[in-house]
Image (tube, rainbow over all chains, first blue to last red; front, side, top):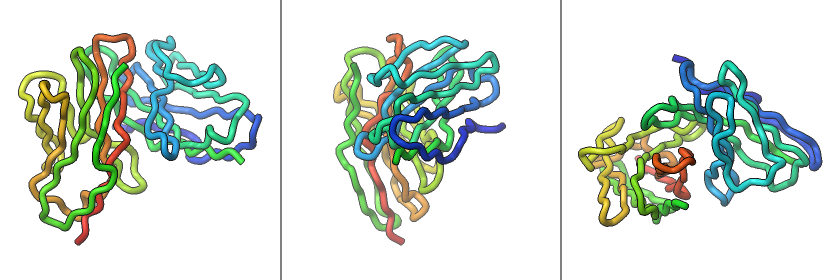
Length: 113
Length: 115
């Protein structure tokens, strides 16, 4: 069974640019979660999508947005990039029904110059 | 909102030593509890989970954790660590009865096992 896949592995941008990160969940999983792992701040919840809808978002500004496609893959968009957006962005997926653990991808390392 | 505290940021042990990593959470309702491990250069992997039932949970690679509801704790244990257990360990909580379903993570504990 293929795990959660994320692309690209690394992304280098400059301040003010826009970044798009992609995630493919495990086959059969309908829920996709995005987390930010920034140095010194730990793992913080960003967004949760299920069945194409945004179900919840963490304490991040609106320039962090995303969507989920009919095949349950997802993309995270970060607009007007700031230096503090430099972090590892992790995607996780799970089955939605019932208590289900989340399975994580390898992450996308976003570096802002 | 829930929060998770991991008291030990760095732990150094010799092989065969016993391990206990502390995890406390703050949330008054029903919670699901998890321990994840991140080996160097690898993605987060689920070590074990607690949803309900027996508060002593056994996971992969000889790890176990005990849920003590009265102490809001979910400590991770292993009787005898190996060099290959060197990794960062994260405790996480979600509250299934709220609308979030997201995981709240502790700050992580970096474990180094000396051969």
